[in-house]
Image 1: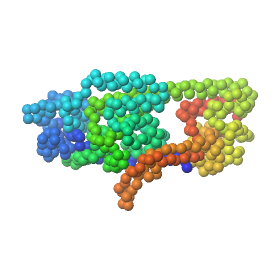
Image 2: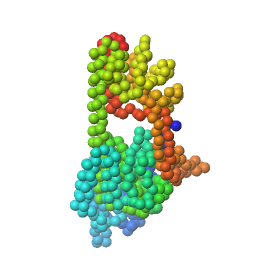
Image 3: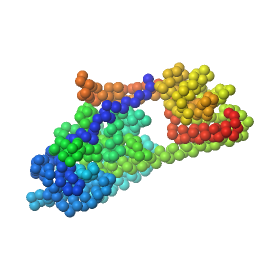
Image 4: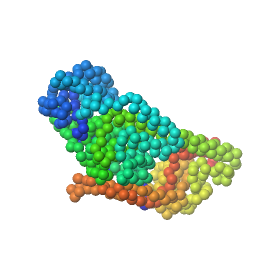
Length: 508
């Protein structure tokens, strides 16, 4: 059994940004940027403005909120690329003024204004408390010496600040499956540490939204969704793009997923490395739980601290490994220039081609010779492999950690060559250096059978997430340890050296 990408093209194709519903703990107003006329409102707006949606549409927002504040909002969003901003808006109604926290962003010629139903003054956090939380977390994470350690500390800090029953950290692999590398939980909750969850649990479209929005909060899975009035925006004549709205309603299948996990509230917070989604904090609670904007901001900042620390640790580890490998490469180049025979220099001297390519076997092919070192397939198998590489026009560096998954004939020698790294020198003359890595059996403990991540009703339209997250073990065969990016970087340098050497010596 080989590794499989359990991402879901079906889930990833759903138009989540045009779901046209919001969660019930806030109110959404869509207003014209130039005139501040209300174009659309969420149907629960009467709780805030004491008027029905029909009465509010086409009226100016300045009738309800401070005109001075709104003028300042307009100034801040003159640049259409301005990021989403928090803002305190004063509601002036019946001679009483109350402050409400608004999250505002611009979408073309409209402003989307999300308002918390609770007044801002009801739960403002003291700056000193927030500052102490952040200082404590930063100091703790700075002490961690590796990614596993910093993840464990970060999970503890997120749980302490947020008050959620469980906090776990996912790390995505190359196929976007997420493995839980840290977890803190209350007694009686299901533990997922070490389990891998298929990519379909967080499909591509959802992952893309995390690059734009740092967190996603669902305070109550059973909260009734709230529609917009009117349904179609009267100005754009289309659904409003709610991609960047904190209040955007969650898809029904995710509500069912939460129900199967036995949680009522959840929050996910992104972890970014090199501008890409590296992982997620996932926070679970057994009862409804809503966090203030201030607390969400602290959690976002903690995520940024973790992202920076992970990047620093990764870069430190990569630099040390790359430096060691470059020293090996330099030694091998020195040997080549000291030797009379290239093949002899690469295979019999203290540093060999195996050392520089991180392999257990390698073959050096020229027009006249096939020389091997270490554990390799037979020479006939190597000739067939070279023909496959040439016919597929792999004229540059090529590597694969499961050769048998793309080249059927490799299944017969997977024990010695599940991984392949090809350095073409002159493909027309069948001149290559090919390195091999052996099969490494891997056991993956999935959080439920990934092949049943989604099940469809008889109509093939309605679907459901899996109901069990019990450990389901998969044994991955015919797969080697993949070459890391810095190893490929050195391999390319080695290939360039060999090409230059050939030009100078006019031979191989």
